[in-house]
Image (tube, rainbow, N blue to C red):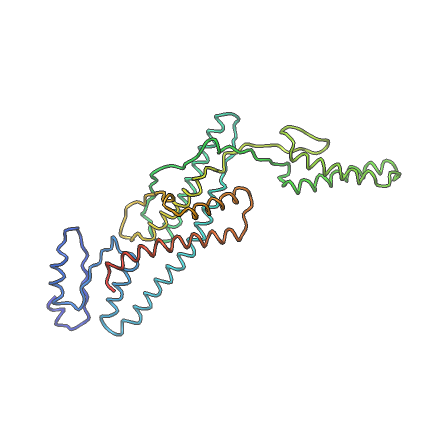
Length: 334
């Protein structure tokens, strides 16, 4: 250290505390005799403010280093802003997918319902794990793991749905049109047999009957048939989850591990533990999420709702990150 001082070159000492009872103050007094700057930097706890503070200290060692260091600091800030935009889009899409997840009941009876519920839980877990893995790899935390402190809160009474589906996979409106066309085609065959004497009455009435038949078919009980039209059948599915806590739990867990991973230094290797913090949100935030969940599950979701959800997610993350950075800035150098 004495030789370094004799060189007159820019010098910065960084103290990396190895234990809670480290002799930090003693080292600071000692190193201050030989170095222009002495800084404490713990890579296991440092987030963006601490890293920027260390970089600023390096930039102040000599004037020619200031501009490139400032460019690096601004680059880190821009990277974080882009990361916030990207993760807000991804998290909102993930939440919407969880809210409409459903699994078909393949076997009749209680056994089939139990299997479908297990598949639903597994699908929810897999999608959550995939979302976490995507963030982990994108942000360079390849050794981080995800630990769940509890499973999904599912209400068996609200899991079973009966979905109507149609031959050819048509929606109700499309089926109405197709059945009307089929009725019209049948009516034309009758007109041809009468040599045109019916004046196309068969075609008109056939179209009307076909359309009405299609409309009735969409509401007919399973297994029934009406004339030439294959009627709607029904299948049982498990999901989507309509428990009122579910939208809040999905969002709270996603926000929690996103925030934890964001603030997690790469040198820190512990697992990310999921916790649900939705109970601490303002009531209006809870109501907003439940309203969006209802729209999603009722098929009334539009692009403007997705945009509003993305903005809400970005605001939630920004507020929580700003609070964490503010706390760290108080213990970091300016």
